[in-house]
Amino acid sequence: MRTATLHTAHEEILIPVGKKVELAADVAIPAAAAGLVLFAHGSGSSRRSPRNRHVAEVLNAGAIATILTDLLTAEEEEIDEYSAELRFDIGLLVRRLTAITDWIETQAKLKPLSLGYFGASTGGAAALGAAANRPEIVQAVVSRGGRPDLAGAALGKVRTPCLFLVGGEDSVVIGLNRDAMMELPPRTERRLEIIPGATHLFEEPGTLDRVAELARNWFQAHSRPVVLG
Image 1: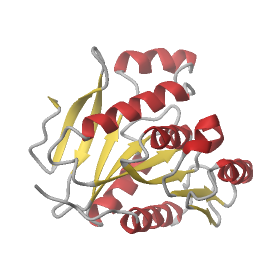
Image 2: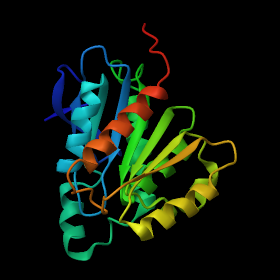
Image 3: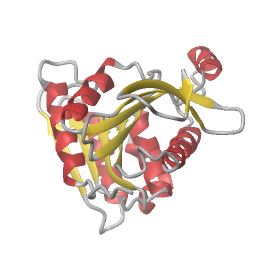
Image 4: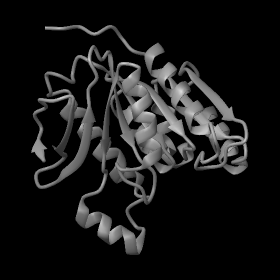
């Protein structure tokens, strides 16, 4: 692994998020990338999530760079595996995403790219919380099967355009997303897309492809022009 500096189109790195904390991440930067999406995985998952990796590949094909990162250290993941006490610590996850966002702003190859968040499950709440912290930087948020309700009071501070993707068979989460959308400020752009036939993990044929397509279109539509040098 390398820390901080990016040299290749695909690289595994360590991102510093505190004095003694570094998080493993996989970075992919396609040629002529106009945007960058930072992934926030769900509870009990990691940067190696096959679902998020599939979405990332579709984004890369659409000239969008991606960062798939673990939000917990290896030691924290070991603790969480037995206690499950950290996967629902939304405050911690928000702080980690915010720190990664600040790190991105220090990277010459990444800072010019229009930044978006893709959050899954509890990662959806973390993405919304971090977007509320950095409204001048984050241009778009996509939540897949997310728990935006867990973002709490941060919902009322989100100014970033938000796309909520929920499976048609995931009735409880549909309701939670609809309620959370009502908590966003009146002028915040929002959209709910219900994927027919999909359950919470979008394992049904074609459903994850639809998620990836909608996410790609949302990020492309909300990317600002790249300013170089």
